[in-house]
Image (cartoon, rainbow, N blue to C red; front, side, top):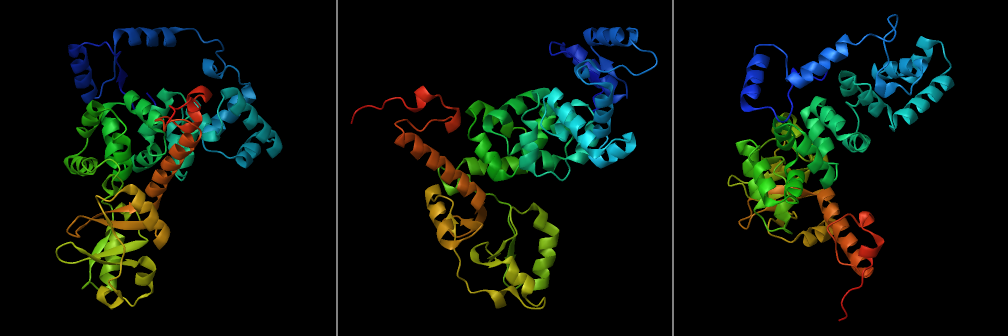
Length: 387
């Protein structure tokens, strides 16, 4: 309820009950199924074990009064120094208490402790500047229902970025546990290339269901990327890039980047296209920043660039990135029209997957569809047919 819910129905609620609940919530009421309402009545009518002090939640029964006090301060966002000053304790003592709290709650960091304390508003502020990879790692140790709540209160872009760092198995489990509107928000905010890599791992019926949750624009992008051959560059590319025309001034380009750059996958390289959309050159952002604002893009061009075709094999992209030391390469169709870019991180994922497959084959096993470290010893080293 603190996370924003206005009621609770059991999964077996009939159609009329669901409709009545929706109408009631729309009017500003709270709604509960009879079974849940009975539980709440029993909870609030139960006598307090200590009328003079707030009773400790059952799930925190292992914590001492002092540890519970410190947990509440952690949930408010206080650091160790602040807690030490408020409670007149040494910093070392507070550190020991915090370590004990994390151990007893079986969590690894303060963010997870805040989740356990159910202070989700504070959690949003605490993790605001966390790298998505670190946040994903912290969340994987939480129960699934708590992961769902955390993803619901995160800003949409942060939630999508964090979701991309979860394993396929974790992503599937999370989506199954989330409400449909939360799933739609998450998928619509994901980077197109990462979303494609996720969708192509799912059974076809599931992929179709998830595609239906996308906005028309995002659905068109996802369907286009999924339409390329499985091992092609088209599956890895994203349409999030900055393209300008050669007659623009440098000032116009910089203004355009400021307005649209936040939606681009990378700003290291800016692409130049003609009036038909054909790629004719690319420029590193450094060149633009150092040029006089009154100069035109054409003044900086040499019309020498490297690009990939959407139908090229992904293995070829690995070679191109190695030879040209780029963080991103443009992708064109057969007519030379710029249709996307592919970034080094996605290519490295492909290279890692290929390397893992080679290691498995060297060890006498097939390339398996499971993470290498999760495969049993017997399966990984089973014998191969003589040949």
